[in-house]
Length: 469
Figure 1 (cartoon, rainbow, N blue to C red):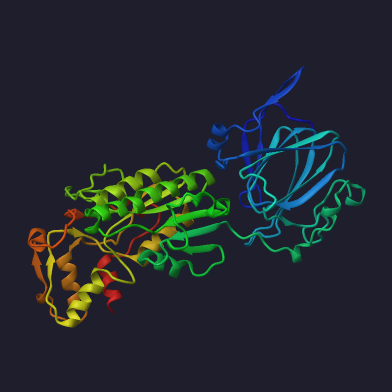
Figure 2 (cartoon, rainbow, N blue to C red):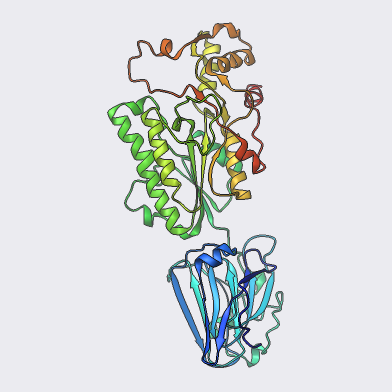
């Protein structure tokens, strides 16, 4: 193979997911040649993952037949040839249906390959003085966990141009295990914050106890700690779902509540945003209808400017702005969440059963969102990976007031709905002992954008009826 000059930058899929072969433009004349070995703007625009390299390594090989690998490392690599020529072999050593799949190709300075984490990498030099270069997106560490496969494994049967008996190998590479003995590389981890909350429990019900999913509470991981940057090996994580928040809306209007709300909803989120940005993690952040003032007659769209009324809404809006700086982010705006634990539906059911006749606000209108539905929508975003950004996600159907919902709860639990007395917000809050936060009167979020991704939220009233049997 002779280095080809002036090819167009182009990518070629392989049989291994994420392993992509690239043609590189090399410009040559009587003096030699020049190429842009890695050019972030052009290559990302052409489809290369924006993988964030932090280290550049070079391997010099003086003899034809020098053979190295098969090594699967815990980072992504951009591999190219600075001089000479190689026969490359790549084996998928990740968990999944393509475990053991092989791809081979010859590389010279006009070809490069993107090797995702967990794909075994090996090569054999076909020319003397070959220089093999690669960018990686994590710093080398003696504590890093590698997975190896024997170069001579019969199951993958790599057709080495130079028989391994005649090649230059290290003693270690000769003794690596066969495919049947290899432990597959697990996927990068998913971290769920706020695991004991209503949404956290719903996410656990959806995700189960998969080995790559980790559930934490504030007792396990303090996001405001200065040690957060070293609390985990963050390159092992693909996704963080932030289901944790300060949600005591009225208490947030007190001096201590204000400080606590800003600490949880802003300071902690800023720390998460830094970690996610630095390590290429997708950050899913759950937001609230309280970032709006409720003054519009139409449903709120994702691009509408925020206008929070109280401290809680202000901290959620500030947290959203921080998350929006993360390259890979989903801000999921929701409203009126109902899950396991204390919530409006369980409170109304309890009052009905105890014979209490409640006064319930009738001039605040919105849609219930059941935590299981919210979890299902978040996982849909993570599976389908639509464009990053803000997505409204609530129950669908007709908007209802709190009083209407309370009457539905009474009816569905076999009690007289006329026991619920509708009142205005002003009547309800008159004579309150403590501060009452201002609330949006209309909390209806437009669902067009999430529906365009293929997710259809369930009707909120149908979900309520199903929940109450």
